[in-house]
Length: 365
Image (cartoon, rainbow, N blue to C red; front, side, top):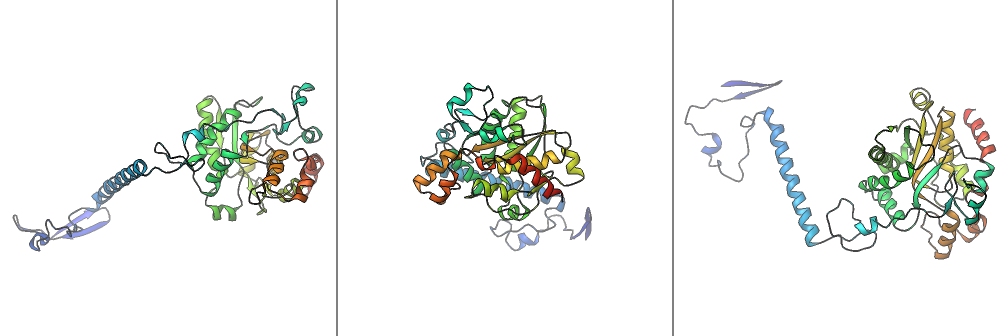
């Protein structure tokens, strides 16, 4: 008998005479399909290596089966239904990816609201009535496209079906608009809009964080000289808010009033004096963007800019949702609500300037 020592593990092994058969061989199991390795035949120090080999072989086999199934039984594109012509981690065809148009027309210099064509005649930096009356607490908000069609479906696949690879592709789109922002600082702190802890546990992830991670990578590719840092702990939700879906602009404002804050200590120190880029998936009325920006500015942020994948041009979106009768759409409303809301973007929050002061007093008290 010999004592083999492997780290803290001691194994007692019976020493066989030269030429002696092993117990497995004596039982006729040396080449049996039921042969099992005895603990002393593969030292513990080598077990991890063997397990790694098995994992690689198993993964390779699974990938091969997946490849064959894709060739023999191609999956349909989740957007257009056409068969996918190549292997992809996201079941969306290249044609749909290539048809995600950017916003067109004259946009508000601050919030990105679509403006009438005559708006550019008076000012080189046109702005919507709401921003003209009460400038938002952020410098500028940009988005890639309107929240409709393929772009909306992609965001739904990311948000509700958890197709996480979509985030990087969408991040590459918005990164092009971020680098085109006026007076873009050379150093940015990227802050995703946070979910409440309960919602985070329920969903399992935060799509804004995935987008922020992708944007960091895309910006480093486009502007290697930029200093970029992402932080997920500087901005938090004070309370669980009601879903913004289906709420009027005023209801959205009230819903997020005082909901966001920057915790004292390290979080405020990380924000103080920094230029912040706030990241979210959709900009609807701007209520969330304004509330988050206010919290960041109160914590000492030098400036806040906002970047989202999609922008809901609600004046047109509300009209379409009522006409098409889409009750499950995020922006579908009743006829009564439509009569109240058929007005320019967040017109009923045109007094955000005074409301922001009230929010600040309520939050600090």
